[in-house]
Length: 377
Image (cartoon, rainbow, N blue to C red; front, side, top):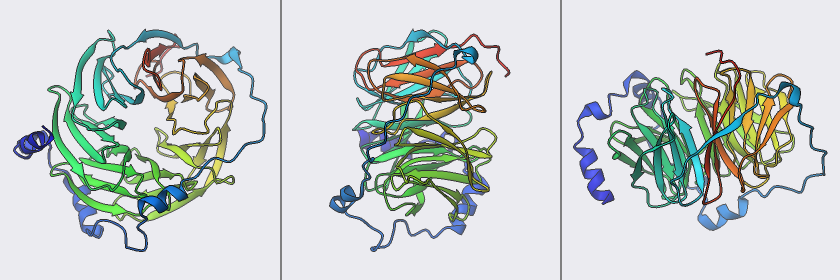
């Protein structure tokens, strides 16, 4: 079936995947097109397992108290039923009317945000989904999986338009360029790849870190992308040249589970497997804020900025809760007992005071939460 989908994708008109434009052309010209690392940089499967970082035991710290005086007051509104296995990824489209979720059951599901109804399921990956994201115009979906592939989807028809292969191990994360039809993917093979989604070609495989690359994200204009890795480093890269510009080093050298640019592009939010989230000014570079109170020692839990009303930092937790901090004061302002298992992923609606949470459980694993705060958007 997958071969048939790929043959069909090959005959799809160019309008399904428009020209990638000047940015991709510049990348193709600037980067060495010989994909992959040198023999010295390659790490075989057995060796790679040995360099996986295991979080060190932490000293017991008193958990910060919740400052309910400034709580945004998020409350449960909907439970979306459909996935039979753990939720591993979710994302609102920029229009705000759809939510997509990915699961270890290898399925993507598209939901109507207003009603909570399941629109359709997208089937094509052979193993569990690790990440999913939308194109800027909300017309395409990109997903990545344990099956080592990245797929381009038409959410309206549910068809897989293209399958991109090249990573040597599980693909952990993906991000779409905001102005060009480029996709970045990160993998347990310690590389980041940039893809031309018009033809599925890998423009370059960058040996980005010494350990698996857990996360990747473009900034607001696509000139930079950031990576986080189990080697404890956060790196900022020039998209055109593929050169690393800055490396952010955490003093504890804890594995990095997730990285994300701030909406204004000036800061980076990084989640570490020592139960800390750090806000970096990457240009100096300097850590500006540290957010504590949740539990994150084992899983790559997503973190987000919420800017539709107050300025909040959002994260799930291994204590089964949704945590919300004030971006400015660092205070934990709300803790919600959201699920019965680890809250692995969250996302914030682009215009409404709405948060989606996904958990590592088989039932009631996808929920929506709403705040009555006055929106500023």
